Length: 416
Image 1 (cartoon, helix red, strand yellow):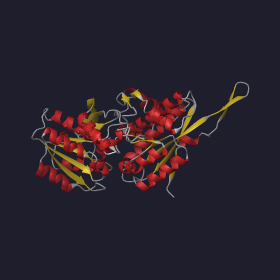
Image 2 (cartoon, helix red, strand yellow; image 1 turned 90 degrees about the horizontal axis):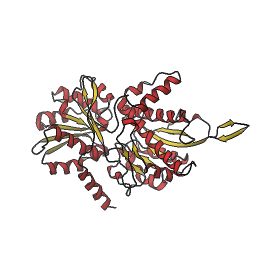
Image 3 (cartoon, one colour; image 1 turned 180 degrees about the horizontal axis):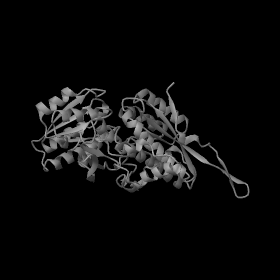
Image 4 (cartoon, one colour; image 1 turned 45 degrees about the vertical axis):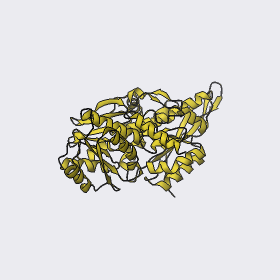
């Protein structure tokens, strides 16, 4: 059997009886959240930081009494970035009565989109998955809840255009990508924008697991000689690309990584922040610890007599885990309030997710608004650049080529 990891957050009994006044008591309400993760597979560099961020935020909420009187139990399952265990995980979540599911991975999302709809359990796919799922009418139970690969691609080109003086006509842009469904997802949008802006785009596929790309980097730097590189790699591949590009003398200030090529872990594995000076990264959540919610988690640990865990130092991925958990909690809160305090079902929590508006987490995310029609929240991102040995925000929340994204969403909808 697959290894199931039950969160320590769920140790509270399903019904905890507390004495109130003269012998009065009530049953502690409990709800289940499902969380898929990769802690032991090819993208464990992500999962071993992102998933603890999720768990810690839920622990913080539970330490404050839960959500409108409801404690949350997290059922976490390590699927090792494999599709069959992800499907098994979904079935386990359904059996346990999970109200919401955090999906992990684009191949896994593709396999589960229909199951989510059939079983009426919302699944979140922040920064990955099926870009067309931004259309809530077509994908009613799949929620990107952050910039999709289409939106990341549009933002990347908008950033490149700005860096190259506002005109891309006649320029050359290389797109290096992990050769799987996630890596190929932005291709159609990039090709469309290339035609519109008049630049030459050439693609360079890196086969899994992405540890060998010397030939591709040589082809890019010595033969194509682009004005800019857009990197869509993940797992251990981003660090390899940074080292290879640095070794060939290509300026990292002319590289922008999509969101899974953009963590401190990627940069440290490449040789450290000094090695990656100038490298540009796209982020859908804030970087660093200077956010109220992160300080609250640190305070929670200190109140327990513990030191905050080392995972908190890898803020790019940890903060994303916090964001995902916060969205799940906010959806639950909206649903409970809509029911006058009663425990909601999964359909009602889905409606609660579609009612999120103005969530910022103190600047950790843009003013996020989700609706029944828009499950992405607008596709906002920031640029953070390696400067002076750390990631520094160099461009605040922005969008890129929304008209192109909307055109592709409309084209996908017409296929239904």
